[in-house]
Image (cartoon, helix red, strand yellow):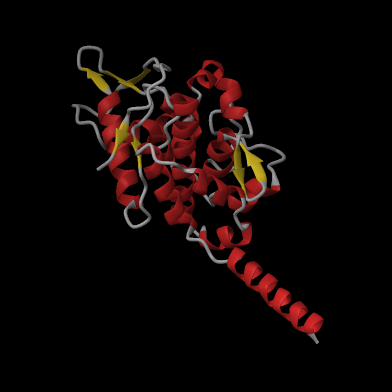
Length: 254
């Protein structure tokens, strides 16, 4: 009888452990808390462990629409950029390898910054084809979590650590739509300059690198003219240089 009783107690104990390990996690809120903790120089080991062991079925269920996906993945991207480069700034010396390396653990999968940016947030766009061609063989993980359509405003909230990048913002699911709008207006205003004599406007090279995401050159002009005030309807576009100097202090906390 003692043996049977002990077996029952052990069985119930194992069941309790299993139940607690499957406790639902609010992944979107966790991504917000994660980047906030990174910026505040707090210990984030618990967040990293949570992401690494995430239940992907739960996560997929919570990332049901594009705003939810953008909120989660932009926070994860920006948070890990800050985390890695604050601890290993030398990794930035080889940016190509840094962005391609599968250093982010998510639900038992190892993914890269390129996977998040081009695969998930840009819906499997090829990194070097200007937003006009998708990858032929995206991963199952990518197809499972990518957005349903590309929102060009993600380019104004993603921060890769460079001085010319848009500011880091802590996306809040209840405010994400407004934050995307504010970030787009702020960055375009900051990086655009109109020359009345030449009738040309100098804009960020992001508009060139990802021109397909913006609807081509015509789309870029429409977006810029909706934010920058200048006379006339016709003007030339000039793309500025990009400052790749490492800057981890470009943070918008409001």
